[in-house]
Picture 1 (cartoon, rainbow, N blue to C red):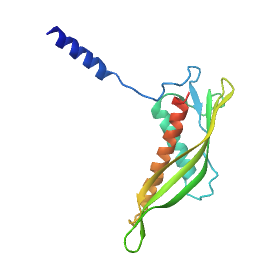
Picture 2 (cartoon, helix red, strand yellow):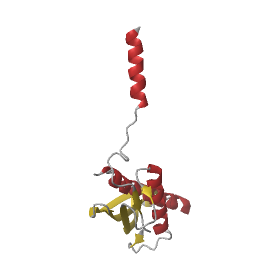
Picture 3 (cartoon, helix red, strand yellow):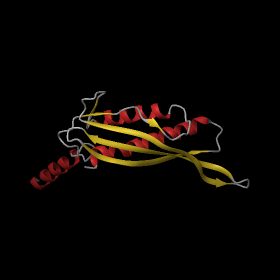
Picture 4 (spheres, one colour):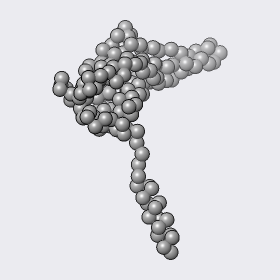
Amino acid sequence: MIRNIIAIAILALLLSCSYSFTGSSVPSHLQTISIPIVKDKSGSGEANISSNLTQNLIQQFIDDNSLQVINSVNSDAILSVSIISFQERTEVVSGENEKATVRRITITLQGIYKDLVMKKTVFDKKFSNYATFDATSKSIENRQNAIQLAIENVNLDLLLAVVADW
């Protein structure tokens, strides 16, 4: 009987614990981060890509809650991001007419993350991620959803590099 109670207590304790990468490695001297507007150096001409990337990146940091996002030169850290490539290409071709059935949107960013307290560059590197969409549909919404998903994917890579790659 006592063994059962102990086993249940241990099981309950284990189930109540959660494991997360986010926030686990941010140095204690960093409390705030500023994220300037993402610069589009891709030459893609994709409408609103810079503002969508900026808004999504800021929201991901707010949701993560590891660092407080502020618009200030007095932040502890700064993450500067540029879009260096926006590519759309055929992923899958099928059928007798060899039509594109799946297309891929790939976004590549250059991220520069600086610790302003310690006055050092933590990283200056490229991040790339993608999403695919059904190219057989006439709906432009499929493409827009893929762009948004690619933005979310590459921004998540950036967020994880900032909060977990120490």
